[in-house]
Image 1 (spheres, helix red, strand yellow):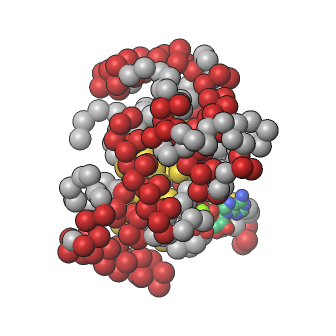
Image 2 (cartoon, rainbow, N blue to C red):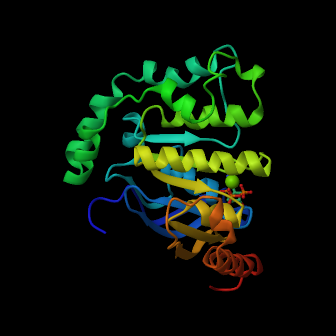
Length: 282
Ligand SMILES: Nc1ncnc2c1ncn2[C@@H]1O[C@H](COP(=O)(O)OP(=O)(O)OP(=O)(O)O)[C@@H](O)[C@H]1O
Ligand SMILES: [Mg+2]
């Protein structure tokens, strides 16, 4: 794969606390995510998934090592609104309608396109082209309709269901056309069918907007269905133990669940996770 990666972590260490009670949240983590890939992180609780996302989103800095988003530090990428974050619970402003919630970031970040172009000027040709060839502001009404929120767009968050709020948060994150979309267990609180429908919508949006996605999940089948690559992590210290490319055709609709290769990937990842739980080396 050529070109500047969308995300790069090199020898990243992150320690919380001091002395004997210190937690090695990430220990010597290396990860390269090429532009446009859908990458999931999976692993036991406490293995550093959210820490890795926070570092990638520029919310924290590593104690050692380097993090780069399209070749620049995450804080710089963040200022240029290149990174979109979907947290575990959708933080919508309760006094604004769904439509006003999702369009707010565009209104308050008018300068981001210029900052982004300046960064694009530093990056590889391929990335410059992708920035220039796409309009910087997508039509949010259209995205809401695509996400099944056409009729809900003028309602307040309190007037819609939890699944709809989660979809609104995803649409909002797509609103600034982030180059990297970081999602921390976004579907974990949803029922199975709402979850599958949101997976479909996420894949559609991803396909259309060519965003790079870094996605945390505890669900093996969700990871296999969505991802180009599944990164398996283990705790104490938090580290990457396996990187598995999922070589299944797209689009990945319902029929995938009946296919042998889908279940082979599930079994493989489950086996690696089991080892991570037991603390065995991969
Ligand atoms: N701000 C913090 N202060 C102290 N320790 C922290 C902090 N944030 C995370 N940790 C510790 O770092 C380790 C990794 O935490 P992290 O939240 O990244 O795990 P995770 O893989 O996201 O877990 P989960 O699946 O439960 O969300 C854990 O042992 C956690 O207790
Ligand atoms: Mg977490």
